[in-house]
Image (tube, rainbow, N blue to C red; front, side):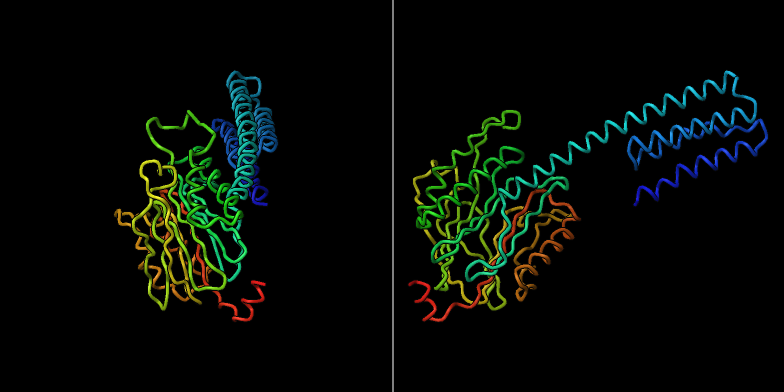
Length: 366
């Protein structure tokens, strides 16, 4: 519909130029301006319609030459030849551009399919939790990057992971995909959380795929991550943090970070120390809100280079639902950074629903 409305511009231009030329004295010649019609058409329409406008412009120039008796002159022949050459090049440009657009559309569809496979949409309710997740790409044309998240239900708990693969491009995406796949497989085996993280460390060699053209010699592949185990029938959560920004817990209007000491290195760098994964436990009660995020949020900067005050902003939205919180956070973050993030960002908000009654817990266990 928009292209049909814009089609009036080149058609009207041809009519106006022809009328001006035919109604003006013979020493005024406006026909050469007709070449602008196909050039303008190419900016908003495809090769077929651009070719039609080019033919109309050439016909208009021929009509002008016939009416004023200059069709057989050298000047008019040169103008017609120039118009034909320019029109051919404009149509060829449209053909190449349209082909590139089709290729780009196919690439985007593949990227969207890859994103759905890597970052499956989180359900709004998962066990006793209400959850919302969002992925913000730094590049407007991107659909996927090195940030990751995932959630798996076990018999009596919900397991989640959020992480950020080092670097950008295909190597980071491959590392993120490898880690998410390993997490889903290990989480369903019912391993204790510490063993699950150790299993992820063992699988973080990292991705079997190599991209030499994008690799940087001498740099290690690793992923910062936080893995959580939130029990169904107890107000507790277990957490293992591997070099990742600490989650933020909102309780009674207060925001506090959840940190583990000593911290673990990122996944993929465990060989640098002999420290074994250990689980930190925290209270996670009815009505509590938990925010998981990657450093694309905490390290976002404004025009003056000041980091985004995430915990401070969170204090104003403590009564929001997970979906409402992420909408406010996303809008505020983009406003703070001037509408452009310098790094991808993944965010998950989790609110604890009321715990089941004791008799319901027993029936669930049975």
